[in-house]
Length: 365
Image (tube, rainbow, N blue to C red):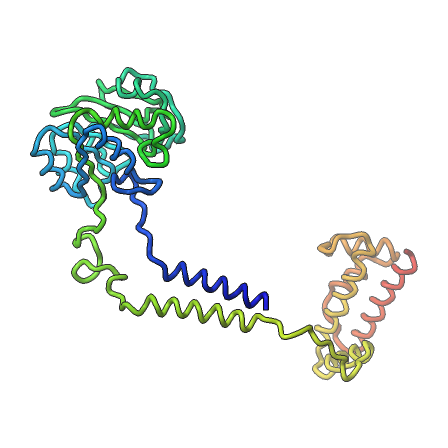
């Protein structure tokens, strides 16, 4: 009864998880995401300080915002984005994390393929935004900026932050964006560094990946994915199949009572079994198999008595057995590993000789 009750509780829990409302996936560095990896807290702090923060998910939307005035373009994701079109947008640019297309977005910046551990680091540079913030939680792929750039927060063979002027503004690249997430913002000088880099007094265009990828980037007819093309009843069929498997497993796995032991109706003595098997070998003229069985049994029984390991080979067993019995080594080797007997009389002689050696070993123990 207790087992049945436990199974019902587990089943109800599984159904609650499967049939419950789906949680929205976390979106890394998204200003509207309240999960640990989102950046909702940072966006709200900026807005409280009077900074306009506009979330966009396309090059067209970012270019439209740039046309309204001097703005800071904050790039946190370039998925489904044309980086060359994005690089043509004028104004200051802050690139966070190892985004795709860094060569076009930050010309002259190189990354080290060997990443550095994300931890608290000191700025060790003259960039005001970094020196005012102090230590911050940074790491990622080390960066090397072009000539004339300012590098901060040493990491590996490079730095976690580089900043340099370019044609229409300043480009700043940060190797990792964990310091801007809701989880890390309150640690170390993370919040101060993020506010100093973003809150420059200009409106912010915050570029994120689109929640719905463009239709041209999706497989299937008219941009539909495989899951969109599935009938609505497929999900319920999968759920019902899981429930059926669980019920069947419980039904087949439950015990109906203790194991019942029964006496054998006929007791067959070991000697009769051996005699019966010998007659089968004789009827089939299987002298080779009979000889192999006799030799294998003798070797298995004598090996531990000779003080040898179970995997001992011919080179170990034959000399040891010859030394213990006083028999000729060649005769012992022929008896244990030689060709099969040519007739039944030879098989009987082989069995007698093997039995003789076993008795010799037993008597000398």
